[in-house]
Length: 159
Image (cartoon, rainbow, N blue to C red):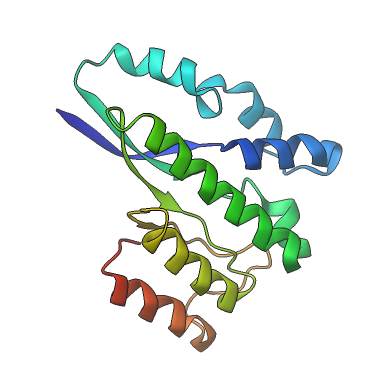
């Protein structure tokens, strides 16, 4: 069996956010929306069928929510939470195809990022979190992210 650990998915929540942003969506939005396997689960499963015993760990599309992230606040926190709920739902509906998922975090708000990382791992079964520098270019090596890294270590989760 092959397990692909870096397979991006544009969750329904992220897809709706990009569609709603229209011309304000990130520059990659047209590509993301045009790449059917990124957001159409049935199509993805058909493509996976070509590879026999092949499973995936789902990861969020990096920066798919960049336009919301720049604004930050509760809208970003809610979007990230909906994304993680979507990812957990997809994995639970297809456990024979998806091994698990990596959760998103709202890095613009380190406290919210920590809270969501813990929720995603403990309640939703995320295998870990995907971290990337946020849209405001805040580096992850700042002390304000120490609680996030400590929580992930305590959870024994992957980054």
